[in-house]
Length: 445
Image (cartoon, rainbow, N blue to C red; front, side, top):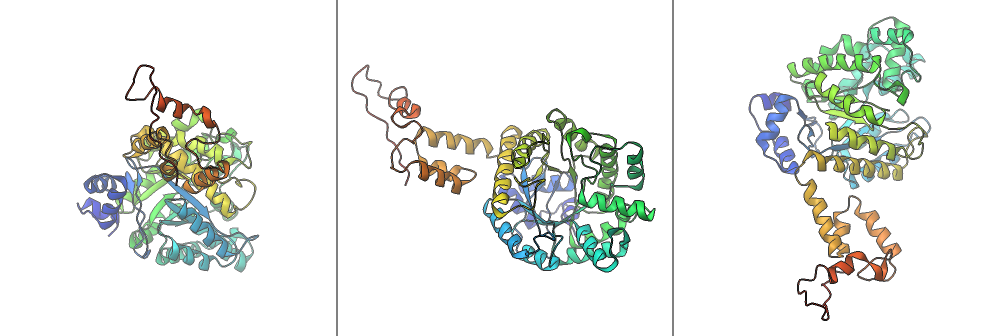
């Protein structure tokens, strides 16, 4: 049985207990949210070393890191290094998007070494196999695609992105109502090309029940992909994006009825003032299914800094109700990310998620910020570093810029405002102009 089916039967699974412990809420609350489909716990029965995570309404905002080889950089060992970096930065999930080299070896290594949920986009591997056998992706046999899905499920993949909402009808309409950037989703473009070449419906849509059977057997969570997400601000919130979202809303109902956990993916490049409406529309059309967003990126002109444009949009989206942020790295739109790019992307998205959690009232969020404020008041550098989202960087910067150990930092030195207020305004003795004793200062060790 899947987590959804067990929740509907009133059962509290070990995975639900683990999520409740992480979130600081009751296990019964997690069970009820899973039963409604408002929370998913991607946990393939064959992913043996998984520490489950919950994604959805009422939980902390989660972050995903994309990994994977390419034809130019096919070495899977590097992707394992990226996995380890992402996990050290406390990422909540990873996706293997490999398209080059030994795809199966890369995926198996990632699953074996990952304690967080692992996702994939099966059509990538199906496309690679098709090119090797038949020379072009449009020659793909739908049977090959479903074979890949089942193989990946057997290996332990916890969630899969499937572009089921890219229907032949919507793609045909794009000829009449073209976009500036057309289709930027790699999986969405593959399926659109296949449909146009073969004059057939998207097999992931026409054979959706078959997909559900595979996912139910292994408790693989469906991540309904946004194959028609906007790739630039000019294409945001257009007819194709919204029509696909309406299709996904129907597929959410069918997934839940089959006992399969499901979440929905969203844009993309979206102007700042359209993000909230996008999220609320998704929640409305998809009955509060967990919403997984790429960014959103709030401008098109920041290559090299798109982890920042995505973090800005990610906070707005999460405050509006998005549950799961797919990181964007500084190399987005430029090339395959490095290990350090992965670090920057994860931390930027975690900052965005935490900023939103403060507003969403997630348990523990405000307490952590208050603890940081108290550590700063006490000039307790050790505690400040411990509380930082990226302790390693905070420690390095502090040590590099403060070669001499002292109570105050090198920014203000003897003119430190906090030190001054600690000695005078906050002095509890208050002895009317007599000599004032300095507050006890906690030094970094």
